[in-house]
Image (cartoon, rainbow, N blue to C red; front, side):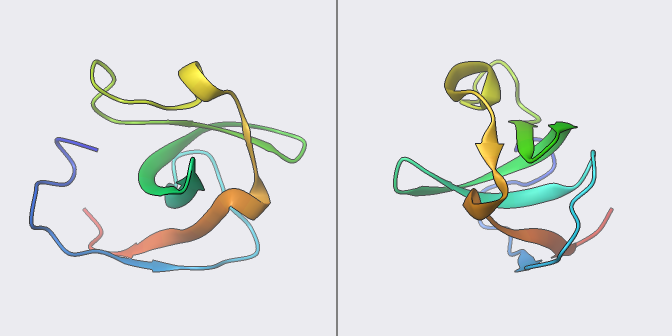
Length: 79
C-alpha cells in the first residue's frame, strides 16, 4: 500500500457491516494479512487493489474475494 503506508507505520482496523468502494481494508489471503483498497463490489464479491499497483498482488492476480476474507476496515490513521 505504498505510498499510503510506509514500513513501520501503525494502523487500526475495525470489522464493520458495510464496506464501500474506496475503503482500505485488511484481508486474509493465502494465510497472509494484506492491506488493500476496495476497487469494486459485485454482489458479495469484493475486488481489491493495492495502491502500489506495479508491486501489488491483488484481485488482478487472485480474483475477487468474499466478505469473509475481510478482517476489517482502516479507521486510523485517516488521511
